[in-house]
Length: 77
Image 1 (cartoon, rainbow, N blue to C red):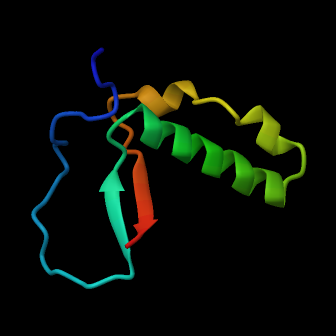
Image 2 (image 1 turned 60 degrees about the horizontal axis):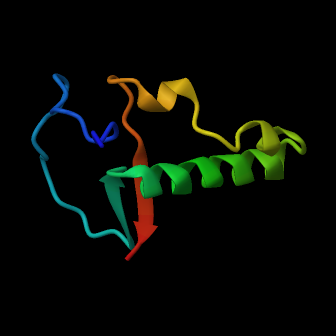
C-alpha cells in the first residue's frame, strides 16, 4: 500500500530559525491511523460547536488527500 499521507518536501518549506520547548509535539500525519485520529477530532469539534455537523464529517474529505495539503497533529508529550 502506498502511503498517501507522507509527501515530498514542499517548495515553501524553510529551515527552522529557532527552537522552542512546548508542552506538545507537532508533526505531520504519517499513516492511516493518524488520518483517522484527525478526522475523528475534526468531527467531534464541529459537533461541539455546530450540533449535527459532526456526523457529516465522520469520513476523510477529498482535500485530505491532496498533494498541497499538510495534515498536522499536535499531541501531548
